[in-house]
Length: 148
Image (cartoon, rainbow, N blue to C red):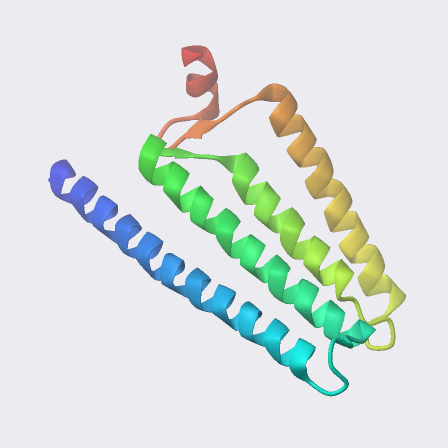
């Protein structure tokens, strides 16, 4: 029964990797086409600040997708949840939000909450890298630490 579950798990992870890869390829094509359209629009080679922010947003979304792909790939390869990859994805997602922040649309409280989340994630990432702890799925953290 456990072999069947492991096989099913590997099959699903392979499917996730395939679908995510296709989505990332399509997102990359979309970015290239958007850049082409922006450059060729009249007046040519003129990109204003709003269009530039939209392009940065697209790049960061692609980067988030690549980090998620790396996380799933690492899980498939090592059967270990790499917490630092997950924290990195969250940091990139919040950084994307800050970069494309519209100060007219959101309040100062929302900006402060994003800053607090970024600070907490940064400290968490620092502590994880400093401790160099990786949690093996299905085992307690203390057991994994003793194994190292």
